[in-house]
Structure formats: C-alpha cells, structure tokens
Amino acid sequence: MPATLIPVIDLGAFGLSAGAADSYTGCDAVNGNYCVNSGKDLYLTFHNQDVSAHNVVLSDVPDVNGRTLQTAEKTINIAAGARYTIGPFDSTLWNQKSGTEAGGVIFTADDASIEVFPHRKA
Image (cartoon, rainbow, N blue to C red):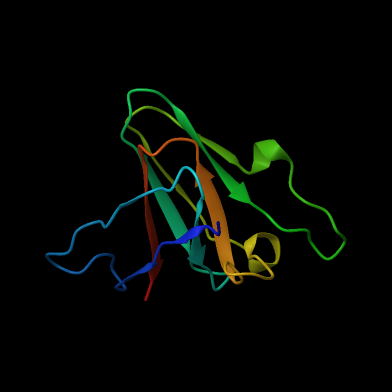
C-alpha cells in the first residue's frame, strides 16, 4: 500500500494562531506516511508517547549522480517522551519522484506511539 498522507499545517508569521493547538497525527507504522514538500519550508516535529525509544526512518531519493544518504543519516532515534523536529527538506534529496507520494517526503515510524506535527510558515 502507498504511504498515508498527513496534511501540513500552515503556521502564521509568528507560529500558531491565538487559541490554536499543535495538531499531532499518529504515524502509520505499517505503510509509512508522507507530507507534501515545497523544498524549503516543511518541518516535521515527532513526539514519542511511549516509555521506550523509537526510530523514524526518512526515505531519501537518489541525487543527480545517483547517490543516496547513508542509513544513519536518515534514521532518527527519539527518546521516550521526547519531541524531535527536523527540516527543512531539500526537494532534490527527499521528494519522491513518482507514484502517489510524488512531491512528498516519506517517513516510517517503527511504532504507532509516534505522532507527527508537520508544519510550515505561511
């Protein structure tokens, strides 16, 4: 199955609007997830709700020379109860080139206790 799309939240110039709250979505540990990426402003904030550490793996794409990143460069270890923000994502290294996820960054959490808050400044 294709990865599950999670919509990106557009933040105001100074962050969340008054009265708004972070909007975390549970990660799909089976199929993975993806968010549409313009290449300059997507940030992913992950929250580990578990009492054990977990990993999130980002799926890169080959660059113009056919090279990909090393596994350690695309694996994020998130401690128990911690939050971790990463971004922005260069579209030439992270955006999928074809399929349902074209133009998106794919990530897969190893456990459903990981939530993600995808956001960008408006």
